[in-house]
Every structure is written in C-alpha cells, then in structure tokens.
Length: 284
Image (tube, rainbow, N blue to C red; front, top):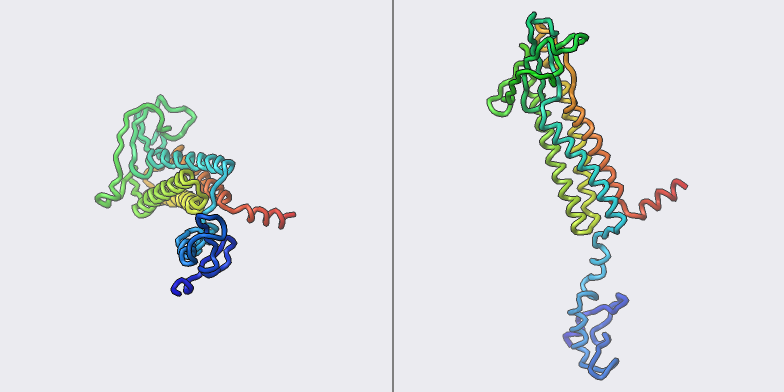
C-alpha cells in the first residue's frame, strides 16, 4: 500500500502509479517482479523523475565548431586591445613637455615626457634639434636622461615639472582607472577561457560586459589624463611650454576602442539563433 502514494513518469513524461509502471523481468515484456519493484525502479531512475528532463532542457547551450572559431577570432581582437593597454599603461610617453630651445640660452635644453607612474627629464643638445623646430625635443633624441616615479601613492606629493605642479587627484584617478580596467580585462579573458574549455556559450555574456567596461574605463582614463595636463600647464606660466601627446597615449586610445569592439562581438556571439531570426524577419 505504501507504493501507491508515489507517482512516477513514463517515457513521454506522463504521471502513472507505480503499479502501472512497466517492469521487465527475466521472462520478457509484461512479466517480472511485483509492481512495487517496478515503482522503485522508476523512482530510482534519474532521467524520468524529479524534473530531470527540465534540467536538461535548461542547461547552457553548447557551442558549435563554427561558433568556436568566431569566438577565437573575437578573442584575438580583445587580446590586441589588452596588449596595447599594457604597453601604453606601462610606458611614460603619454605627453612631452619642452620649453623653447633658445629659452635658457645654452647649448643644451631640457625636455620631459611622463605617463601615469613616472616622468623622465632629458637634456638634449640644441645642435641635434631640427632647426625648424621651435621647442626642445623630441624626447627620442640622444641625451642624458633621469627618470623618477611619482609619489602620489607613497607620500602624497605632487610632481613639479618646469616650475609647474601636477594635479594630484586627477593623476591618481587616471592611474586607478587604468588598473581597474586591466583587472576587468583579466576577468574577461578568464571567462573566454572557461567558455572555450567548458564548451559553453554562457560565459560569453560576462566576458562581453568585462571588455566593454574596461574599454570605457580606458577612455575615461585618457580624458582625466588630458585634464590633468591642462591643469599642469595652467598652474604656472613663468616658463612657456610646448606639449605634445605621444605614442603611449595613442596606444591606450586605440586599445579602448578595440576592447569595446571585442566586447560587442562577444555579446553578438552570445545571442541565440532565434534572436537573429527575429531580427532578420523584422528587417525583411
């Protein structure tokens, strides 16, 4: 009598009593053990009871070989953005500062270039500078160089360049945003690696969010850095300075656009095929 309190499901998902569940005995179909044993076998079967079919239907989609190739191509685009970001953030050629080459009246003139973490002062020979150039530089010319790290995060001091003082808060904010963007890039790369290793499309959505946010943070970092340069030049006008944004800034700007594009590609690849069919049907 206790087995009549349970219900099991047949192969088509219909609920039947344990007594009605078919059992297979040693003599073939229709024969076999008592109904209780058939009901127990149905309860112990994981594929027909306790919502097993629903769990299988709700599982994450498995990617195809063509989709895997597209994901690897988009991941390559994101890796290019990551490399450019690391190259730009790790170098100090964001902006070059130089007074007029005849300002000091010597055979040498100073030039400076700096980035997020440190600045380098370089003493150049005036004879090596292009005669048509008014300012001292560029910083790539040979000369004696002296590089020092900024003390924003250690002693809290602002840097002084050509009697001009940097804006500490803007400089720290741009540096912290660059670190946060790099952390998001690492998280996005981990999600893509999980998607390729586990063969599941689900990980593409968090990866797309990480890469898009990292690209936006990189562009915001550039905006804050440019504002800090403007504050630096306006802090003291006793020494006229020419400023030029250099190749490190170009690398970071290109990286921000590439990361956003890679995140959008991952988001498109994460969409199910039914969504594409709806879009095509609406467009037609």
